[in-house]
Length: 355
Ligand SMILES: *Cc1c(COP(=O)(O)O)cnc(C)c1O
Image 1 (cartoon, rainbow, N blue to C red):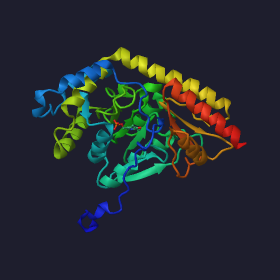
Image 2 (image 1 turned 180 degrees about the horizontal axis):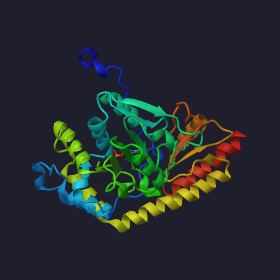
Image 3 (image 1 turned 180 degrees about the vertical axis):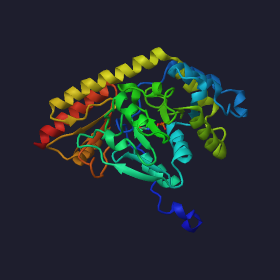
Image 4 (image 1 turned 135 degrees about the vertical axis):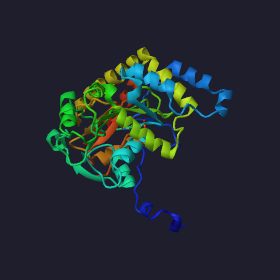
């Protein structure tokens, strides 16, 4: 039946999200979800939005959500674009700025959706090898032929570039877009949002899925100069003018306005990360310096694939990629303290028995 498929789709390799199995209860440390529920105010707003007005289309401009993002970030509303999860915002951005043969440079170890968008939209992408310690080689991202796409902190490495390096990259690419994906910035990195007033070639993309515990309602946004926001709106209005539904707009806006809950939750995740990292180092694990809600670990004596399988049998899911440069590592999302204690205890048992 594939004769009906568009020819360019036949060889497309779509993104593969982390598994969400239903066969038993797992401790889920594989998709970087937040272990804590969203703000009670977000849940209230979602419930309140489930009313007779659902017969009406949502606000296509996401006015109140954009206002909440503006309060949260301190940027004017004219520099904000809201979308149906940041994956959608990223897709629209690839279509708006890097499509049809346009060049973009990105680290070879990075968010695995970028190569998918690059293929879908015909980006001529260049994958720059990260250093052996997984840090991003900043020089390679200055004076690029067409622009830059970078996650900061990077995924799945958890390594962050300091703001000064991001600014060097932005300043080093005048007239070419630098897209900084800050899905994990709230867990210890510095946002580049403050540079937007100064540079017209910077687009910063964020999400409520991670630090705001709202992966289930799909809301994300981009920040940049008016010209970049206009390009995103142009693409959006060529595909679907109502990308963010009423429920998601209400829930995301309420979550962003509950600053206190956000601060408490992200600090808890950071504290648990540091505690779990220390316990795993005791067991001989090595890891990058994480500024995200996950850690990227290896054990010098045990193949990552074996550890992945052993954990899965014991009811703990983490992420493993059988790909060059990362196949000796596991990416482990930060759960509750109890989740991480269970992980440490299973790892202690596995590594003890395996010797
Ligand atoms: C999780 C993640 C996203 C996607 O977030 P959504 O808003 O849920 O689509 C974007 N970029 C990176 C690097 C991520 O890890």
